[in-house]
Image (cartoon, rainbow, N blue to C red; front, side, top):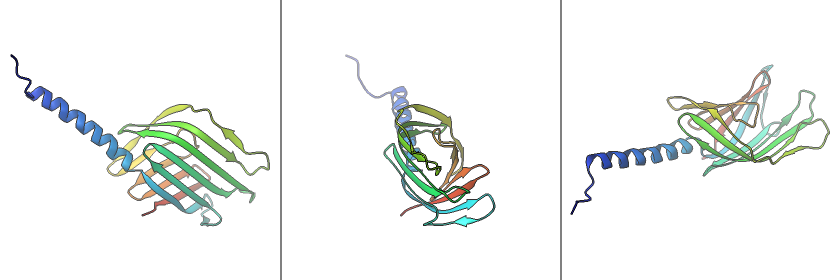
Length: 164
């Protein structure tokens, strides 16, 4: 009768599987938490803080919620609300949009989107720095520890902090 002892090949395979599972959890935890918008810096250098510009976001167990409020260059209020599911790996950001509501400040009715579309984009890592472009927003994200920036090129940079 053959012994079912764990040989070196099996042990290495099990270790590799455990490392992959741990790395996936660790990568998601790098961005997980509750975040608040602290400051928005406009292209002209003007800084806006709450209540002029506000935002809150939660990233938890693969579900993300985001609400951001601000003003157009003409001074009209706009708002983006978003709910999605996500996965982040060492090299990719995958997101499935569940709902977005965007009021562009034009006075028209807000745009609703419930496509449940899934898209993937590359992730760049440099030490603790994680950068990617979320697939359902026209911004670039950079996370580093408890700081997060969202940049809309030529318009603003939002500075977020993790709530502890």
